[in-house]
Length: 193
Image 1 (cartoon, one colour):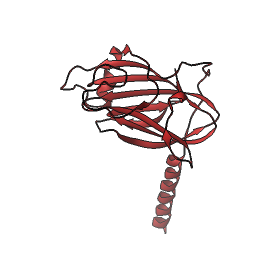
Image 2 (cartoon, helix red, strand yellow):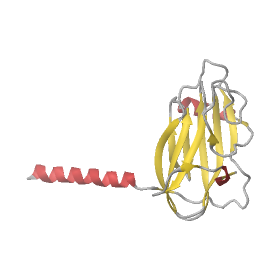
Image 3 (cartoon, helix red, strand yellow):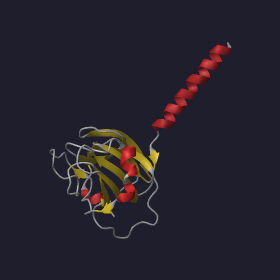
Image 4 (cartoon, helix red, strand yellow):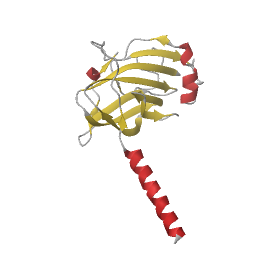
């Protein structure tokens, strides 16, 4: 009988843990709210030099952040896959690039949203400090996790990303949609800095 109760408690604990893990991440609006942010996202870059690359992972990319220099702002998060040898985002070099991206994302309504980041290579994307995209290694332009977030009210929310591109093509994109509707590529006008 004791084994049955123990098994039932373990099963109930796993069920509760799964339900908690599936709950949307709760976001907090930026405080204070920016009154009229500039379009796009601010970015600082670090360069790891010509290939062979020194950047092997998100950890090695983050170690380079102390040597960043301001770059031309990003128009948003709509940087489709490039061919090998083309510049990364707004940086003039094609390889071994780390981007420290800061700004805001605007949600026009309260509710539960789904967010999906795409990257080539690694990314650590956070809205209101909550992780909405994470990949530590190298990959082709591909979707990372699809995350649900709870937006308590319309407005601007802090957005921070660390992104790196080692070698080959690059991409950095985001899809957004209210829960129950189709995910769409995030329009550039929802980002500000």
